[in-house]
Image (cartoon, rainbow, N blue to C red; front, side):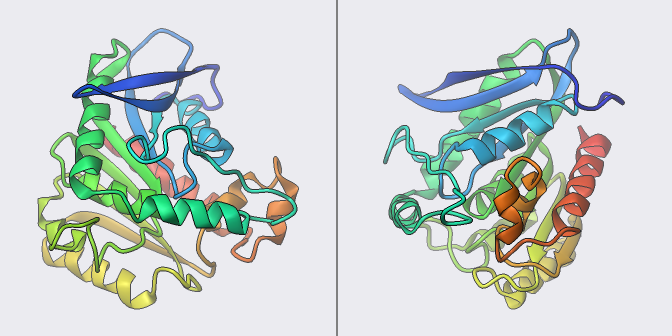
Length: 265
C-alpha cells in the first residue's frame, strides 16, 4: 500500500461481464501509474448509492483499486436509494424496495458475481497479483463473508453482516458453516446495540472463526446497526442524528480496515 493518503483518483461507471450478463459497477482507482491492491465493496440493500460510492472512493484514495458491483442486477438493474435529511437515514420506501429485492437474491448468483468481479480485477494492468480484498456492510457484510471463502481473497472486512449464522440466500447450509473455507484474514465489526444482528450471532461467528483457527479480529462498538455511515457526518451533518451514530465507532473501525488492507494486500 502507498504511504500517502487522499491521493488523486479516477472514477467511472463500468460493466463487468459475467456469462452474458453485464453487472453495473462503480470503479475508483489511483490516477498515478503503478500497481495496487484491489478491494471489492459490497453494498447494503440500497444499491450503489452515494454512501457506497463515497466508501469506494475513500478506499481508492488510500492507494487501492476499488470496485463496487451492483448486487441486484438480475432483479432490479439500476436500483439505488440514498439516505436523506428528512429521514435521517433511509426512507420507509427505500427499506421496502431494498428488502423486496434482497429477499430474491440467490447464493449461486452472488458467488458467480463475486467471481466475475475478481476475474475483471485480474485483467486490470494496475492491479497487483495476489492482492485482492473485500469489504461489505449489512447485506454486503454477509456477501463479504461469502467472498472470504474464495482462495483469491486475502483480506475481508465484514461490517454487521446479517443472517450469516442462519441463512445463505436459498441454500440449505447457512454461511457460517463455510467458515473453515476462509484462507485469508477477516475482520468483523458489530454494534452492541444492533437490533438486526444479535450479540448471540456475532458470538457464534467469533466461536466458529476460533474453532477453525482463521486469522481474525472481532470489533464491537457501543452502536447500533449501520454505524459506519457516521464516518461521513462532516459531509452529511444530519447523520449525527442517526440513532446508530457514535463519534468513535466509525473512525476507529476505519483505522482497523486500513490496518487489515495494509498488512494483507
